[in-house]
Each structure stands twice: as structure tokens, then as C-alpha cells.
Length: 109
Image (cartoon, rainbow, N blue to C red):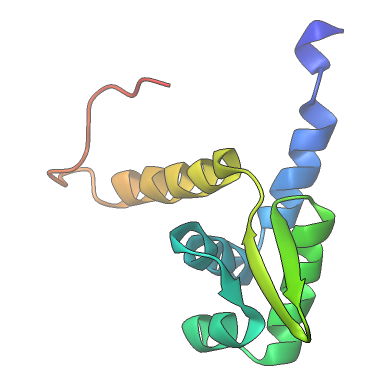
């Protein structure tokens, strides 16, 4: 079924992203890879909470981890997902501020 191809997987991706904390982590990582400690500082969340969210994102395949000794550095696995996150945020900002000068009348993707 051509139209259904990938729909289930996309739904699982959206489930993994369906958290303010995880979206915040994704935005931080879209700027540059970061360690857990850096993500704790950037998100103002506890280390156990950040680690829990990173596990969800890792299991969904949207972040990757590289290890150097005891230090783990996380990065976006695929820039497509970073674009989905930013596009979703831009979409809700356009809706909340329809008179914004950044609002465009047509989107091309």
C-alpha cells in the first residue's frame, strides 16, 4: 500500500518528539553536538531527566551518541528531523502571531 508506507514509523517518530523537554533537547542539538552536562545546563533539567529523554530520542533513531572515555556526546542523527522540529515550531508561531512580518503566505516544501 503505497500511501501507507512509512506512516506507522512516522507516528512513532512523532510520539518520541511529543515532549517539550525532548523538543528543547532537539533544538539545542540542532545547533551543535552536546554532552549530557551541556544539555543539562542548556535545558535547565536534571541529569537523570535529560538522560531519560535522550534514551527515548536514541531509541527513536533521531539522536546518535559517540563516547570518549566516560563522556558521551549526542548529535542529531538526521537533519530532516531537525527541520521537522523547526518547521513545527515556526508553524505554531505563525498561527499565534498571524500579523508577524515573518509570516509567509505560501510555503514550498
